[in-house]
Image (cartoon, rainbow, N blue to C red; front, top):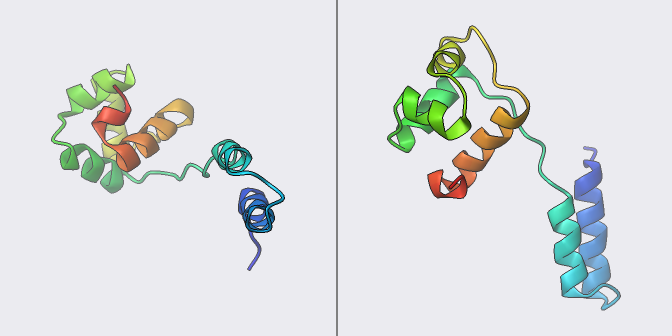
Length: 101
């Protein structure tokens, strides 16, 4: 199985760090630059995230600075989140609502 470029870089840098050739600060900086791939979100997944954090459609829309109808369209499968909205969904899923505020 092929590794992604970021996984390869992180793995190589971890090896270099364990040999004392890369310091911890440099290793953390490299890990920060190798951001995860942002996945796609199904309508069901968006509903799960929203309900997990006890958010109404209007509240999620407000956090993302989008219209409530856009969230409704995501949840109905009529539209898919893209760009910044996918990144925000990823962030809220990993870090919670406090990650956005």
